[in-house]
Image 1: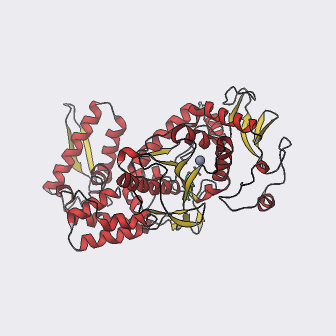
Image 2: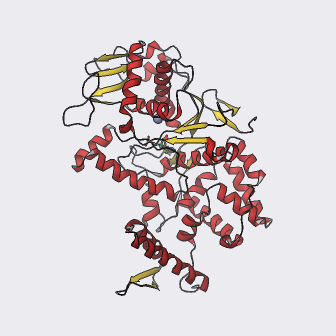
Length: 466
Ligand code: AMP
Ligand code: ZN
């Protein structure tokens, strides 16, 4: 089968026809979060972009023939520092953060990847790769550290297109004494006895960041696979170093055939990032009134992102959210969404736009025209395909109504439905879900009252701000 999908490959800096190594087993790896703190909405961009690609690949090759791996980095110096600060173990910290992360990603309408490997569960694979690198002369142990010997790999710098000379010029001057060369990077480093660590041939220690992804992609996708993704900031050094490790350990020319990178979500022209302090967490956007005085459903952020091509930068504004929400509500109302049967076929215009290097901006234009021309079942299937207006996520959170004027029978029925869902969640002791439903209703001005007899009644709170 010849593919129609074209993707921009950072390796070649060109748009290429996507040809998987094995159409029966299409493999994609995306670098996941370091779970020490809440993810911000810049981090949401790769989650959404690669979710759309995952959906498209499943459509093209069949659900059973695509494997999407997104890792969880649960050992890292930032994690150690935060856990020590809070007086808890790194496992407790990463469990807690990962729970919030998973809820955030669900709210963004993303499918779960096939595997979400944790770094700490792949220490054996990391050690195995490091041993191979030492054996083949690409790494050396010094002072409890193991370093990758960058000049041992002539092709180093191929992805980021930097020469060793450029890299040296940008490198810091205070090179650690155990490094042979200033560009050599850490594969393994020693841990003090109070720090997290594992026994290894080089003593008690912990892995560097880059080796984690080489180990997890190897374990779950093999020595070579199809697509590797992440944000554009990962090209150098992270992805360059992953390639160095995997190619040298397995004696291969390529780690992944296609390297895809999303552009930044920006604030006033700068990358949104933890270190600049200009970030908005997904969690705050969903659950607090900090932005525009209200909570926002994850799908609104999803659509706001999909309106721009994934390689372009996006400027973060509340106005973009308002526009996206207005679109979603218009489509929802026009389509009378819940009662329409979606067509089985995803409209060809939508799929064809995505074949062009994931042109989601064009898919949104097509959705507008499906709406204009009243092609409602096609509209519904297009939206579902893009992960928008999922009944569970969107309709609950954002079928908004003006409580003073518009408590229609339809809305009453919906509220009763949510109350039932909440009672079911409580019966399963799923307090998080129960609270979520209560909070979402409260955000719409519907206040629940739990009665002694086990029933729940509701009333409209008049000062509702919406
Ligand atoms: P980090 O936690 O910084 O490793 O980031 C996790 C993922 O989010 C990586 O793929 C980053 O490239 C991506 N990322 C971080 N900040 C942004 C941003 N402002 N815009 C888009 N992607 C980002
Ligand atoms: Zn990675």
